[in-house]
Length: 179
Image 1 (cartoon, rainbow, N blue to C red):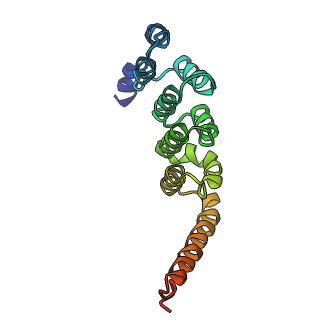
Image 2 (image 1 turned 90 degrees about the vertical axis):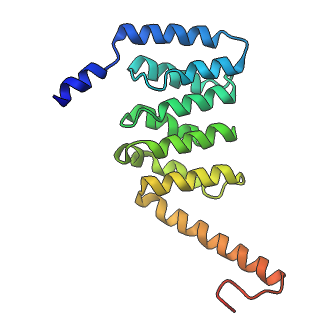
Image 3 (image 1 turned 90 degrees about the horizontal axis):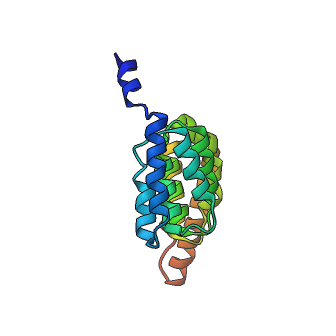
């Protein structure tokens, strides 16, 4: 019975082709919001050709950050897809804050067995100068719960504790250890 339900929910090649035509029309727009909405409209349509097209758009450095962030959001729906996870892991290091944050969030939304394969990509982001990126990476690591993130997280916590102790000392307040 469950197999029949899953079969009925599968996107056909014809449906995927139609969705891609709608995407092409949206991407041809001069309006960035329309292009991003066109990508977002594919959120619930899972098909290999759509996933591959989303990855190509997300990898395109000429696409706006809003469109690339929408690509990261859509790939987050491919919860058990190794190819989607690999792209998300790469995008966590994107130069755009918006794309990096959305990629971290989407990587954290994947099934743990798939996300764990790419958990290491988050480690360098824990000490990002951009607080939003660091927070998104830490939150994703907390959801993924992989051992490769433990030591880098503990190291980052130790640095935060040292910084806080220095700030408190400069203010004339006792250290974090109660002294």
